[in-house]
Image (cartoon, rainbow, N blue to C red; front, top):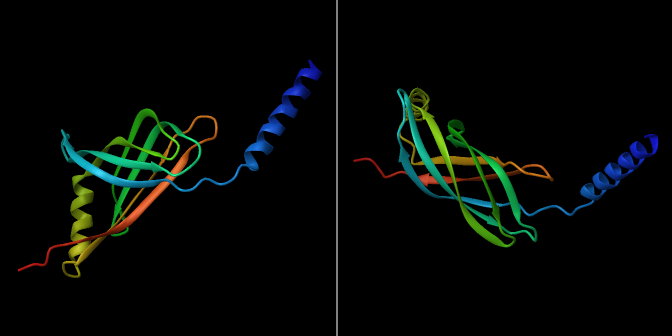
Length: 153
């Protein structure tokens, strides 16, 4: 029994040291490919966000679950989770769908706060989240940018 325990500990130590010496992964490239409306309830807005995920790595990304957070003007606007499972191939891409929820009250307060100083010319956004992993843990991602707003009359 003692020998089996020692063998198990040696194997775990070797496995962990091998993981620690693995070269770093190049960050995933994630963009919003589309947004569709979903039925909501009460004071919430529901949407289905389609993310295009590009994997610029030599190993496929196997995921089991997704978390997504959308921030606008530095404030959390919407969040969502999906228990979707899949694989983004090595040096490949795929579309991943995540339903998100937007609190109508949060959206109104954030819009009011953003417009208090006058209508902005552009909105800053950030999409971040993570893909739940299997053996090697989860993989985080983030993307940000600006959206120009049409000029008022």
